[in-house]
Image 1 (cartoon, one colour):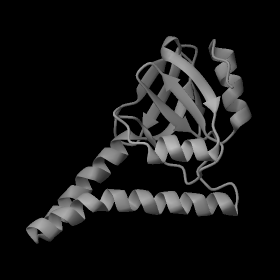
Image 2 (cartoon, rainbow, N blue to C red; image 1 turned 90 degrees about the vertical axis):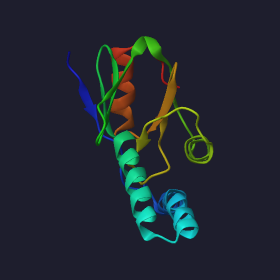
Image 3 (cartoon, rainbow, N blue to C red; image 1 turned 90 degrees about the horizontal axis):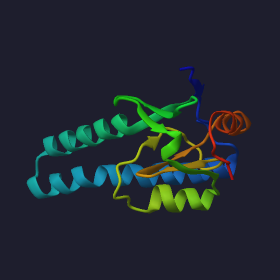
Length: 160
């Protein structure tokens, strides 16, 4: 089965994108640090801050998608530490281009009850939401035209 690797866009697209991405990064960093800070305040032991943040960083790395690959069978999400997650085309409900505000609202601000992959991009623009029966993922392809073409060539999905 031939898989075509699709790289994410990593860098901001413009200065406004940089500012939005910097805000998101700062917000996420604060969220990651809060559990460790609370434990230190309660226990007065720095080791709890260190261990808590190491555990959180492990899970971030386990679920951080560094690229996807597309084949005739489906999409594979390749992570830093975890094993790749394969989603069959039959399970994919839709793929749609999202706005920056939709990405921020649904990927950053909305708590999720589903464990979902996270991304490694420092951009808030140009995302596509890939939705399947049991989850979703926001992906900013480095080359959107190539991404859409490969989805059309390999699946029944019409990218909106």
